[in-house]
Length: 599
Image (cartoon, rainbow, N blue to C red):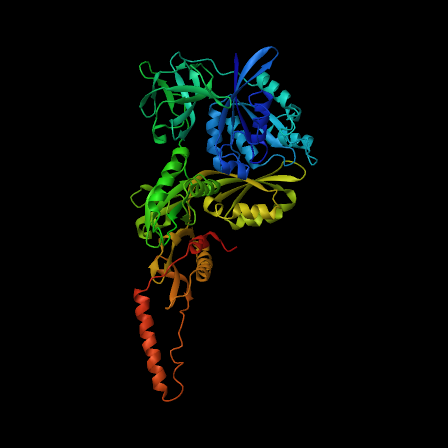
């Protein structure tokens, strides 16, 4: 039997999951009675948002010209935050199906994912999807693919994943055009781990692609990266239901279970080999995911139950079993108590994790504003990673602070170029190049600091282009600049969760805007509350929350004025005492005020 391994890649919402559903039905892997939309998306969150968060690997069979083919395909996510999932999936394949929406055309993530596949020397089949829609322009979109990526327009397959039109032609093309798996280079087993997830009953389920040798049920295998050994208790393929098999040969993909208790024991990108006859060298793997956005999660306290820190710890640990690409470690804040500092691949990833904690873990969290990773070079030449502004030492102790710089690729309607240019330049962007990809759409490249993108840049891009603008970014380097840490003092005490790092030119403005928002969020107390933004020992902005004042002279209806003065002096002394011992409660909304850039 011939084998073909491929991934389905596209921009978000271009129809990958629907196409996967149709491929399952067309190859009779799923009957019409069992069929449902987004069949491979298991999470409720994936269904509600209409996005793929986790890649899914499936094996189906298809016959062409009397030859039966085993098709192993992976449905991948489309959002920029999950590029890591896509790159892992492509490593296990020889080809890719690039899906482009015939109503939207080529978008930022289309190009980014196509280049991921090109860089791994994969054979690519361009597909123009959703041709059944009234607004479809398949010929124009095929020309866009040729102009932006260089694939001949006549090679594109026109199909509708919804109606099934063109699906048989696509399956035939996959079998004929995509290359078979490479010939084994050694008889010793080498299998690549390209994904894994945690099952409450069976432990860690590992997805593997065998490149050399054979993998059999009952084998004692070794992870070449960690050196750990396990005995395989189950081998199988998703068709899309789990189907047990006795062995995997070269080129095959599937899952294995070996009573592995924690996801940390499995390293994605590692090579599996036989323990008593190991391979000399592992397969080329890929880097660990590098978290770039960080924020703190604290339990929302309640009067009945007190702090829910233990519940939050349990929920975070359980979630990390199914998502190894986010990190966490305990932190403590004077204002919010005990919590966790979590690292994410991007803002959508952070949003998904928070919602999963709420749904799957049943915990309500207070979240601080997200920050990015900085590099700090101390005077002795050592470089440290800074993920929390509160960890930044005094300015006299370090030589330079470097921020992550991104290459940002924007695809926007040509009419909006004049609006988007000032937006990017105002975020310290450096213009690189501009390219016309069709009569109505333009691709612009900028270099911008990641810190200027993560808050509201995408929302502003969408609103300025009426939803038609798309962006993709990748971190290319860390660069030193005139960066300063701004501390926020509430009633003379530094609130670490509100500290932020900003460019020196923007620090004053951001400090003033934040204090104005804090003034609206923090309730008035019996004493006056000063709010200050400070760089080092210098106050750059100040706001004051006035105290609530009781009219203590109301009972004086005449007589000597000294009676009133005596009462006012007494009140003044009382407020002074209250200010020295009083504490200010800061609501969650105040911590999110730092998100607003005050454009």
